[in-house]
Amino acid sequence: MTEIIKFFRDEFERALTAGRASHDAALEAELAVRRAFAGERPYIAGYPKRQRVMQIERIYSGTSRDAAARTGLSVRRIQQLRKAQRNFLP
Image (cartoon, rainbow, N blue to C red; front, side):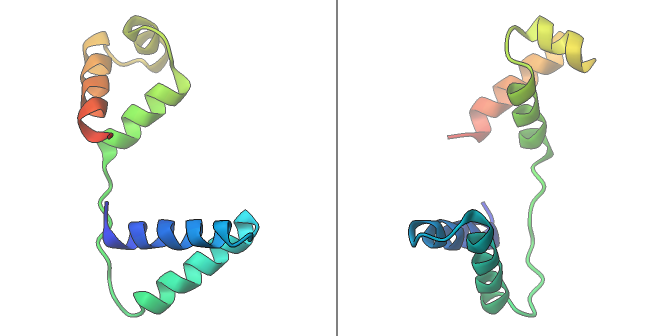
């Protein structure tokens, strides 16, 4: 996880535990990120495989064959993405 994303998440969680509403917590976290990283060009990796795997798992539970039929991907590709998910996620 990139430093800026971890920093934002930590600031957001800190604001939530302080009793802020989620919208206010997000604004506070954004301001904290802007203060900490002002003027920098942070690198944020895309993780396209992880995004696709999470999309498939959220939307299409069930067998690989069902997921393949719904997404238009091959059964083998669904299996590869699910295997990649196990490697990416803790």
